[in-house]
Image (cartoon, rainbow, N blue to C red):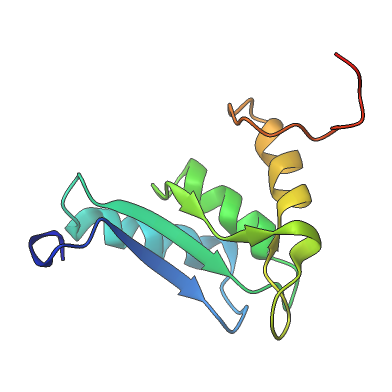
Length: 107
């Protein structure tokens, strides 16, 4: 897809039915065939509330660079991955992100 101008490809779970293993496997399969300069993203609906876990595993183990998420998981239908849940989980393995989870705190 890179030769056609794609900078990023997304694995999507619009039905919210992927398990963690499914999400990991699909993002790895994309990584196997994409040009290394093409970023990989992941978009999950939160129907069975697996979206944050699927998003974390696709970044940590599946090679995803981008994750679609929104505050409190708001979105059409069942909603999206919750930013709050994703960043809380991403902080556990020590991933660096530039998100202040406590903006009211004085520095």
